[in-house]
Length: 281
Image (cartoon, rainbow, N blue to C red):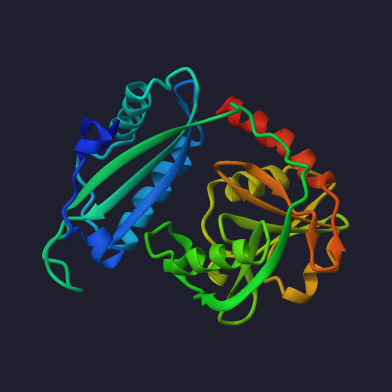
């Protein structure tokens, strides 16, 4: 079942015009949201990021788009798919209504929610081998547009194809200044002794939900010092740990980058705290 502009319909019946601006120009933003037993994880952060993304894209935000209304829409689609008492992944996409060319005919929006089940209500530590490499064919531009989740994801798509063709589990993306920005599907953190680094949003890093949660967690810990700072590719092989974060898996430790193998002690410690934070809301 799909929620298309507030109406829940079978997926086969959900129809969007071929002139839809999300398809034609990538004129769309989205959120990937984790729902556990009917509870939306980190809902306040998702809501405010979605509103900020719409403002950055100069979309007209409907007066009905209150946190309560959108929360109700998310819960109804999980219920319609029989996932109220399970773990679900909801994709909430908002697109500008069709009309115009590069210049939109309107700023009004439409939206669609889709959902799929997930296995565990908790974030689990994946200790299987997980090898990464740099993707250098194309770059992420530093600046505000790169911090939001829009449908303009050509670099991520091409990087994912490169990773699959070369047997890597993931790749790291660079910006035009050749600084490490993020992974194909999440934010990157680097651990060296008691210092944990993650690229700043000004470098073009995605304003990730789990990134924000971990930053707040780390600020309250005495055994680590957090630095939001640019990361050079040369630092990667000198690190003790690398890990990737996103709302679907939580924290994914990297086991190997080129000839360097990494541990996961910090990732393991942070994952337990992240699970506590998720349960407490």
